[in-house]
Amino acid sequence: MDVLDGRLAAVCRATLERDDRGSYTVPAPLTYPHQWNWDSAFVALGWLEISPERAWRELESLLAAQQPNGLVPHLIYATPAPIVELVAHLHDVPVVRRLVPALVGRRYSPSPAWWGWRRGGDGRFCSAITQPPVAATATWLLFEATGDEPRARALLPALARCHRFLLDERDPLGLGEPVLIHPWESGRDNAPEWDAPLDRVRPEVTVVPRPDRDHVDAAERPSDDHYRRFLTLVRRGTRSGWRQRELAARGPFRVLDPGFSAILARACADLSRLADALGERRLAEVEAARAERVAAALAARTGGDGLARAIDLADDSESDALSCGSALALVAPSLSAASLDALEQVVLQGPLASPFGVRSLDRGDRRLRPRCYWRGPVWVNVGWLCALGLATHGRRRSSALLIRRVVECVRAGGVREYYAPGSGRGLGAHDFAWTAALCLRELGPRGLCGGQLTTAAEQEAAA
Ligand code: 9WN
Image (cartoon, helix red, strand yellow):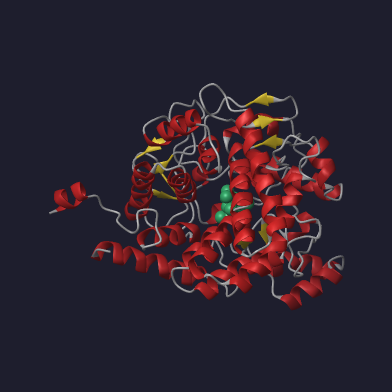
C-alpha cells in the first residue's frame, strides 16, 4: 500500500470507529443514527480488517433482531433498553407519547410509532420490512477469513430462516423470486422503477417530517411526494398488521427487483457453501436448491439484450429503466455467457459506466438526476457487488478495473454516501460507514485486486 492509500485506509478506519455503537454501526451519525440491514453486512467486511471479533458482532446484532417469521428488519432503532421497555408499555400515555420522538426517534423519520412499536427478537424497536439479504454472503466471507466455526455455526439457523421467509411468505405465487412490498426493501428507495407502482399508492400522509434534509441538500434526497407515498405504505401496512404473505399477494406495492433477487441467489449459494464446510449437509442442499431456483427464475425473465429489469406485479409490466438494479444481476451465482457479456459491457463501457463506478441509472435516461440519490449517482456498495460478481464469473481484469474506479471515487470525493457519476464529487451523508468499510477491504490484501489498486501503467505515469 503506498502512502496515499495508507492515509485513505486510516480515514476509513477512523470513520468506522466514529460510527461504531458497540454491537452495530450507524450508516452515518447525523443522517442515519440507527442500524440498517444491508449496511451492517457491508460494514462487517470493513470491521474484519480491524477486528474480526467486532465484525462477527455486527452480524450477530443484525440477526438478533430477526422476527419469528424469519424477516430480518431493514431498520433497527438505537434505543437504550430501559427506554424501550418504558415506551413499549406506556406509549399510549399522553406525556410519554409527546416525549417519544425525542427519546426514540433520534432525528430520523419514520419513528418506531409508524411501525406500530414492533420489536425485534432482541427487544429493540424495528421496522416491519426487510432489505437485500447480503448477510449470508458477509458471513461466508468472515468465515473464509477467520475459520471461526462456532460463530459461523451459530448464525446458520437465522440465515436459513431469513431465506425461507423470502422464498415462502414473500413468494405466494411461486414465482421463484421474492416480492418486495416497499421501495425501501430494494435499498434503492427512489429508483425510477418504483415510480409507476408508487403512482398507484394514493397518498394518505400529508405532513412529512424530513429530518434527513437537515444535513443533506434537498436536491440530493427523495422528493416530498416520494416520502408521502413511502409513509403511506408504512401506515397502511401497520394498520393491516403487516401480514406478509397477504401484502406480497395483494398489497398496494408489489415488485420484483433483479438486484434483490440476484443478491438472494448469491446469499443462498454462499450459505450452502458455509453449511457444507460446517458439515451441515441437509442445509447445504436446501440452500443450493434455493440458489438455483432464484437464479433460474431471474434467467427465465432476462431479455434478449441479456438484462433483467424490475417488474410491477400489479399489472405484470416490465420497467423500461436500465438501472443498477439490472447490473446487480452480476452477483447471481450462475449467469448465461450472453448475460455476463452484456452486463460486463453495460457497467464498464456502456450506459451505466462511470470513471467512479457503476451509475444508478442509465446516463441517457430522461429521468436522470446525477445528484439525486438512486436516480443517477454512483454508490460504492453497488460497484463493489458488481466487481465481486465479475470476479466470481472469471472476469478478473474487469473486476479489478471496476474496483479501481470505486476506490477512485472515495479518493476524489471523500467517505460519502454517493457520488456524482461525472466528477466523483461526494454527495449525501458524510462519514458513510459502508463506503469506509468496503474501501478499507479493497485497500488491503483481501480486496478483489489483492490491494494492487494502481496498474503498472498508472505507476509509470505517476513517476
Ligand atoms: C431508508 C441506510 C439506508 C440504506 C439504503 C438507502 C437509505 C433509508 C433512508 O439509507 O435508505 O431505508 O432513510 O433514506 O437508500 O440503501 O440502507 O444507509
